[in-house]
Image (cartoon, rainbow over all chains, first blue to last red; front, side, top):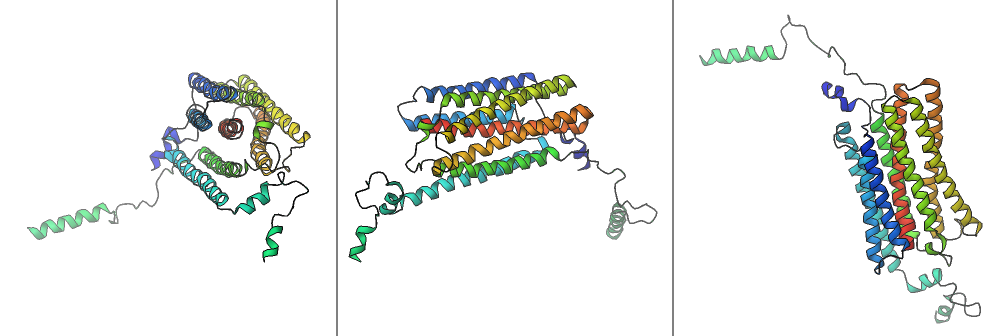
Length: 141
Length: 220
């Protein structure tokens, strides 16, 4: 244990790259940024869903490039704790994002139609029409 | 025979656990494992970055839910100019590579080079902020401030939080430059330059998420 503390990897210095690795990361980032921008600015593909998936994949690829070439992530650094904490964070992140979107989408689709009109349907109903959506319900009570 | 062997083993065992009075007992190691000053900083700072990632995850989730609730107001296509965002992205990406050059100069103990590249990094960071503030000013001036719809609220909070991080990164950078001017490239200052480099590259990673989810996905 004591020997591990003296290992050069754990002496408090963040591993960094050389000129070549920085330039590789930069060139890859430029390419991975330019392609989705050009794709979207030129109007995108016919399928909006496919365009979105492609753009997202490019973003993920670029994040990995940044992690390797700029943040110099190394599975062996700090006895593997940086990668362990990264994996943990990613798990929490996926649960948060997917869970939020799922739950909120589910709530939206289970809302009663009246309630959605109440929120979003302000412009279609002109000033002359009944401006309180629940009004026509009241006589039947 | 059997008994003798057992006795032998018994004496063997007693000698291995050092209970004989003539041997000095060792309660601690002669040489304590020493930790260099700031030896836990990289991992500790990494933990901070991971918790910051979770803050941004929540803001992204909020935007994902509220991003299509326009409240009768304009949507992403009407409000965002992708050319401006492309310029903004270029500024941040350039600041990332110039920070890399600053790190390389520090490795070569080239203090003027380090200072020069840190200043260039700060300039690109400031350019990014100016463009972002111009965009915000433009939106608010046109009457589309964070109060006008749930979409704009979540947009301003997400992008504004990132901009706030960049602002503090620039403040940190100038404090660090003053430290280097006063004390030179001490071990502490080297560590600080390395830590700020993690922060700076981390902000660029978050920006990839912002321009993809907010601007590109909004324009599709």
